[in-house]
Image 1 (tube, helix red, strand yellow):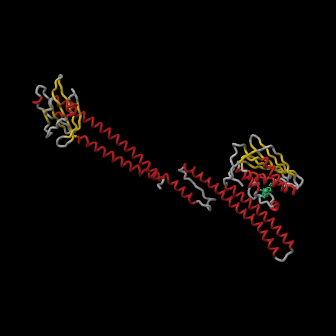
Image 2 (cartoon, rainbow, N blue to C red):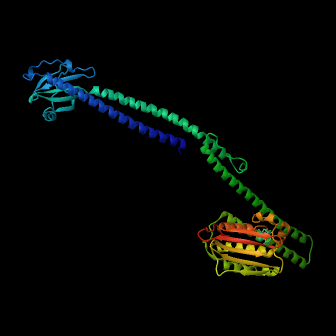
Image 3 (cartoon, protein in one colour):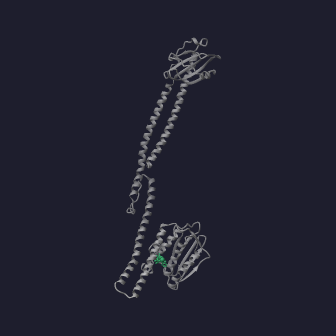
Amino acid sequence: MRTLRQRLLTTLLVWLAAVLTLFSVVVFLLVRQTVQGDIDQFVRDKAFLLGHKVIPSNPAAMVIDENPWRSDRYTVFGQTFDANWKLLFKSSRLAEPILPTEELKRLAAHPLGVVHQDVVGPEGTRYRIATVRMERQGKFICYAQIGVLLSERDRPLRNLSFWLAGCSAVALLLAGLGLDYLIRQWGAPLAALSATARQINLDSLGHQRLFAPPNAPELAQVAATFNELLDRLEAVHANQHRFVADAAHELRTPLAALRAEIEVSLRRERAPADYQHTLEANRLELERLASLVENLLALAHLDASPPGSAPTRVDLAVLCRDVAEQLAPLAAAQQVRLELALPETAEVTGESLSLERAVRNLVENAIRHTPGGELIIIKASTDESGTRVDVKDAGVGIALEHLPHLFDRFYRVDTARDRAHGGAGLGLAIVKAIQEAHGGTVSVESILGVGSTFTLWWPRAGGTPLPAGSV
Ligand SMILES: Nc1ncnc2c1ncn2[C@@H]1O[C@H](COP(=O)(O)OP(=O)(O)OP(=O)(O)O)[C@@H](O)[C@H]1O
Ligand SMILES: [Mg+2]
């Protein structure tokens, strides 16, 4: 494949060659027209001069001095004919007379007519000839002809075309060399930039960046854009790295607990009730592992943004009621009350399973962090700006310093206590990812010791992009 430099060079040279050719052709045609006009005027004037030399009373007996129509520039000859085109006189320079063609006879018959012709003489030489019909006081005197060798007109034109072609070729060569040099000069910073870009890999992503030379401000913009891309890539890479490390860490803890419990119970024979107790503990650990793996998968799906099932209109009033029903046993176990404040309908466009998961995660959290006897309110509402769901609890609340990190992956406020609850700190990160996929937001307001309100919000249709993925 041809490089940009080669293409640029070829295109410019082709254009230049076309312009030079056009210029040369125009110059050649103009000069040829001038030379032709010059010769035609010369032979016509001389033909009249010759005609005037003829003695009207006896044209055949004239004595002609050839000097008046001699020229330093051209080889000139003259001939005169009578009314019947019988040769009266021919220059001594002509070995054989050049006899008129029928066409010439016809054209020259016109009084005071002047005819210019390119003619081939008997010996094969080409001439430019002017023929004039001489009359004096209305009386025909003779046809007078003056001619010059055509080769004398063509020789300077040949020289001109040679010079034009030669100069064009030299100009093209010089332009090619100059352009090639300039393009290389301009392309050097670009080549340096691409060489640096080629060196950047995952290891050097953290510290290597592109720098455009100060004499190439156009490239500074390219380098800045590329560096921004590298920054984003670095952040994504660091996030993924942290995510994998956190996930491995979270998986290791329940697995280690499982192994320890099994090893202890295998150390000696035990009563069936002991085995049952151990197995029950193992079952709880396994449930925790299963939920963790399921959450990890959900996040991976959201990250990969697979095309979700076709988005539909989802009624949040119905969805919230379903979630409350699903979690009623958990709420009952915690002795908290769930209250619904729902309109007739509150519709958004989206993927219902994902949206249900988002609401469920919030209500689950609220139940977990609300002491027995307290109330949790699930409220949905719609106004002209959009639709929202609020999950309000009268629980332990969250300290201000935790709020900015609450939606980060694996973030837990009280690591020991939350892990004991079985939480890995992924629930709110999943809610955030689902909301982003639906063009919505999630936010929290909380007062320590008073309670928290988590709000899901979707802008009104038109401003609601379709979800990028589903869980
Ligand atoms: N309603 C709430 N009241 C008080 N603290 C909360 C509430 N909701 C969440 N939190 C705090 O925010 C942290 C992050 O919540 P998140 O749902 O992401 O994780 P989790 O519930 O601990 O684990 P997971 O949801 O993955 O099972 C929780 O550990 C908890 O400390
Ligand atoms: Mg949770």
